[in-house]
Amino acid sequence: MSNLVNVSFLKKNNPLKITLVGMFFWLVVFFLIPLRIKLQIGFMPFIYLIINYIFFFLGLKIISKTKSKKELTYTVNKKILWKILYIVVFIASIGLFLKIIDKFYIRGASFNKSISYNRILLEKSGSSAISIISAITNAFCFLPLFIYYMIQPKKNWLFFLCMFLFFSAGFEFIMLGSRSGLFVIIILFITYLFYFKKVKITPIKFFIILGIFSVLGIFSTQLFIERTKDFAKTDKVAIEHILKRSNYNFTITPKEETKVKIIKSRNKTLQAARLTATNFAQYYLHGVFEFGYLYNNYNKNHYYGTYTLNILVKFVNIIFRTDFDLKEIQNAPPRTGVYTTFFGPIFIDFGWFSLIFMFFFGAFQKLLFNKTIEGRFQFIPLLFYMLIINFFMPVFNFINGAQGIYTICSFVAFFLLYILLTGKLKISKEDGKTQYVRILK
Image (tube, one colour):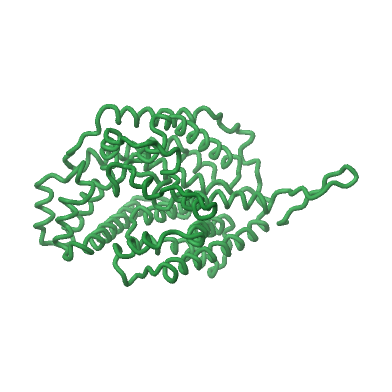
């Protein structure tokens, strides 16, 4: 029996700190890259955001910290962990298989088709029970590598299998041109590396990582250009469209001199770098200003969770034959296809009752954090995803988007599965005595 939890990492990267760092980083991007604000956020939307943050922080603070004597009191049996790893690898492999069957054979998507066509094709074909099951089980692909790093065996074949499963989750995001989904994979992978002390930051490594992110940024921009070329036809027209007519230019746009420099640049590398920086800033910042527009122009009913958790509503419709109008719900915002921070979907669902939601969301995260400090490793993947949500609160809702609810459901299913397989199960009573059994020993 042993404890495998990196408590120092968790304490340094707790939910409160990551949330504040995310807010600070948004401000750095805002002041660092020159853009022109076309639509101000407005006083009441700004107050709404601030108060929701405050209630989230109150929720984090209402739950007491884990006492030092309770830290790392939970131990892990490595033999059982090996068995858990094989079970999770099996589930993730089944999920990947079902995902391929669903996307390529049942619904007809293909890498040979354009990003826009694949999106239309998948949207028209709709979801089925196999779509939901494959999405949840496929999200288990993030777990084998986590467990492998905990055990740290010297089995190259198993390591490469875990790595393959981890990054296989990105094939759908590439096919659909989803940059947010790809960034979740990258950020989660980097989090694993630092949590398990696979990398240590030195000045040289810092610049290497910065260079990697720059290359990924350029690739991300190129992905967006390719998606835009589905209707713009050429690189030049696509770039002009991104700079002048893309959806998020509605609220925040590059300054005229910046547009001219990028469009007229003859050096393709320099052009790509400038476009990447400008596009990233727009992409990252526009959600706050779009939220202002949403708040001031939303005049429909609130949906009490069915907008944010729309994917679960699809599942309910399929299994229980309910008739929630998903098109009406998803078309509720006055503008679609844009980011509205974490709070946009929450506002659509709850209005000002979001304060209650944010309070309990903060309390839930603190309880989750306390469990990990006690050494309960099975809660760590879910905590990591919560940290991603927190960091990007000023940008995007990673519950509602990037298939976040599937990832959350898979991480919840993982710790429930672990509890089921390793906990004591009551089976009968004989002579007044209760008998228990463990599935994994």
